Structures are given as structure tokens and as C-alpha cells.
Image (cartoon, rainbow, N blue to C red; front, side, top):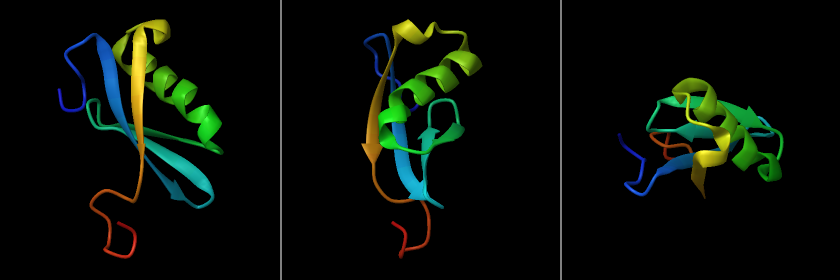
Length: 77
């Protein structure tokens, strides 16, 4: 899976701002969610991953990378 490390349940999460919220995208499971602020990002990403994979939230670690819209127009990258 793209974005999942070999050391357990560690997932890469891409984050960017859209309409005053942070979009959190998990490439390994091709899923996204949004949060109003970055302090909520880790819990929201772990919850999304757990809901879609069945892995317990407590066993999930996220590497959140804040940046620009991946694959978006040059003005947003």
C-alpha cells in the first residue's frame, strides 16, 4: 500500500487548507476527511483509517504532511 510503512500501522496523511478547513487525505486507503483545525487532525485521520480498515485506532500512527493540494493547479501546489 502506498503511504503505509513497514513498521506496523503507520500511515502517510496529506493535509491542505480548503474553504477554511483542513482536508486530510490518506493515499494508502484513498480516503479523505476534513477538520476545522490542525489539533484535530491526528484523531480524525486515525478514526477514518480505523473505520475503513478495521485496525484499532490505538494501533494507528499518522505522519501528517501539511502542504498544497496534490495534483492541483499550480497556484494551489
